[in-house]
Length: 113
Image (cartoon, rainbow, N blue to C red; front, side):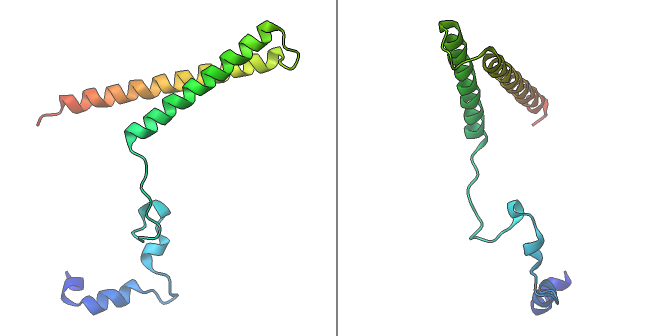
């Protein structure tokens, strides 16, 4: 309220004695500086990227498995097992994210309007 009555005082308070602006102390994600502003991807785009990433990991695991079965000398069993485990972990993580999204959606739908 006092800042509204005295705008020049608010500007002076905003300038610290060490010359650092208060908004310069904020993390990059909270800054209002237009030069720092970049548009973050939306939730749908992030979800699509996650699904694509999991699909890519699963595809790589499948390719390694097929190469091992075909007898390629540069593919060993350890590589195949590591790729399969990465694929499994990625799929499990994506499934958990999906479950949380569905749970959040259900909670939102239960809210009174």
